[in-house]
Image (cartoon, rainbow, N blue to C red; front, side, top):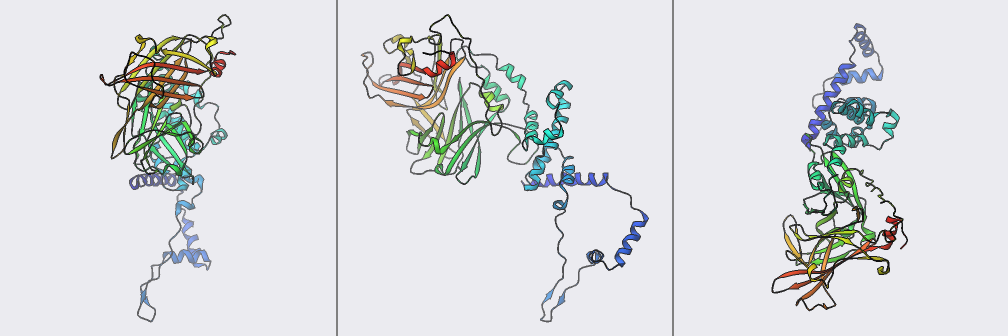
Length: 511
């Protein structure tokens, strides 16, 4: 940091010299005579100038043998005495890297280094170099001095770094048009996120309003979701926290010694931990940690016997993930567009058939199970308790039963320790409507528990387990059986329930 301030102050000094050279006036012969007359007069200002030019007195004695030195008081900081207009003029000569570092000097320079007028000129200048004139006019046209300053502080700074990071909205939107027929999601979501170097960071706020930001440690991609992990060891105690925010971040590679590189932050999720703490529950544990689940997809690992945080995991579904990670702002999330399929007046059961379900069970190491089930339906007289039932795997149909590729577990890791929690994993569910558009998307940790009701099937001899998930829009219920001889799980039943209210709103019906 000291090196960064040194470079920033050196750039500031060079800018100050440029201003001085531009405003330098040749001295006249009358100026020296005017100064001499002032010096000869008895005005206080003249005396102060004369004193400032005198040499410091030599050490003298006070009579007791102790010597002392008479010194003059130091002058005030020249930078603080300059008007803000002059400081802004000097800062306008700096490049982006030096201007960004200047914001770390003190509070005054932080406010000056985020001035919208400076960053707007820098943004327009850079746009003119890389874009066609027509595109520049579309972005900067109609922007006057008043509207520039009306933007929030640092708006044009963030927009500048967003463009400098290689962000090209038209390019990645074109890449996302290719749809994977297996899950109905853009097939290049992972590639776009990696090419743009998108990362995710968590900002937590304690009860006193103090914020702490943590960069991701690692992330694991599956076919329809990504699991992001934070393995830091400096988390505040959980019960001291009041707010948690998740941002998608793209960074700019600047020659800047600061740890916090500039970039664009897009708010994805914001959770009030006070309100969701009551709905949180422990979904698994081992000898070292307990897994605490905060709906919908947040996992906090707590050291057993303590309230300190060991690690944090977040599950993010691929549906509109690129848009949510890039198109929001630091305080407002991206708003999903409302896609309404065409209304069908001919089919009386429009909205009850033609569904497709893609489900995946995985952890941070491997895929456990992945299934694709199409042409699912529910008759109007089969709607129960406000839910439409879609049977993907029937318990009585042995041909539909699916073996799992391994045991259900969730590995975890911190900076110094690691472990493996049994009977826990991640579940990603994507339900497509009749038009093959994503209708209900879920990505959440789940827990496998021993079934209270024994299986009525005589085809398997083993313990029966169940995995359940529920939110206001739907439910998922999975039945499994453990075959000890084969050391393998078999998935014997899979039922997805969609809220009747969600179906009515989406299709304009009244079931």
